[in-house]
Length: 233
Image (cartoon, rainbow, N blue to C red; front, side, top):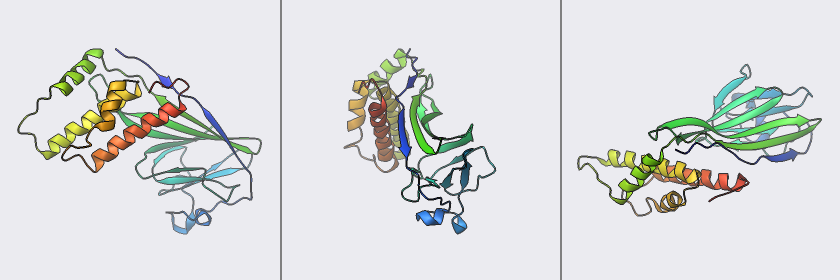
């Protein structure tokens, strides 16, 4: 059984200080009426970060959101972080630190069950008047036994399908395979990564969300490789 916890390298970025601005409209992005921020993180030193998104969470300490942008109220140029519609995030503002954690569904259960886990966390905080961003990727414990992995590869070499499976059934099979290849690749299984790269390239019915799932998996693996101090891919 593989039982590993990966915590990847931290990266630190500082941001320059400019004139105070705190309105989403002034940045050219707002899904809120009147440019009102979805959330304003008010730091003890008087500085603020705003989130321009879809809801109103100013009374919340922790909330969930997707498709939003983070701006520094002291810098009216570019956004400091942006998350698309397909990224589900948990946002926390505690201990004078704004944390944005991207959530992922990974097949880490004992029987390849999908579980929602923390994937990438960006932490924003001030030291004096300088804003810092710390980024961390964490992959949780992988519980798949070696027997399950061997069974997966055995089926891959000699696939047996129920003739009654419909198009939606095949789609489900494709999706489950991608998620298995994804988690094996994350844990440095070179064979799984090579299969994943070529999977579905010439398969009938492999399109749309399946292709997006595959590309997202490859992006995760690539991101982990770049941030890891000991890449194995």
